[in-house]
Length: 103
Figure (cartoon, one colour):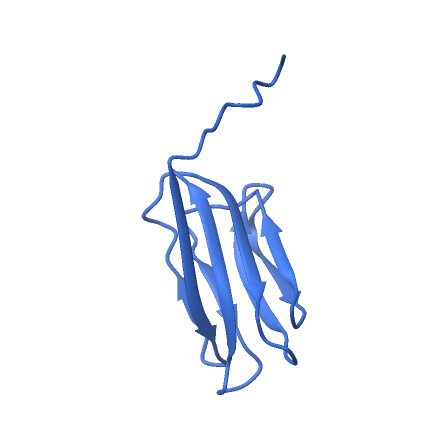
């Protein structure tokens, strides 16, 4: 059977709950050597969160994606040297859950 259904490449899993405001929030990813996946859940019921990150497929230009209220962002192409930036629409901020799987 290929690929092996039991094979797991990630050796580290991180879960954080943070608030993204209009001042911006930086999620440090550069402490990892590689990332298999990043997931951001916007827990706010009303406002969006903007995620900015770099990927190998688009290395010199940042990817900017708006995560709707209650929505998810899942990324598997992520450049670890460039951190994840989250920005909320105002100073009250939006609570976000961030999951990072890597090594």
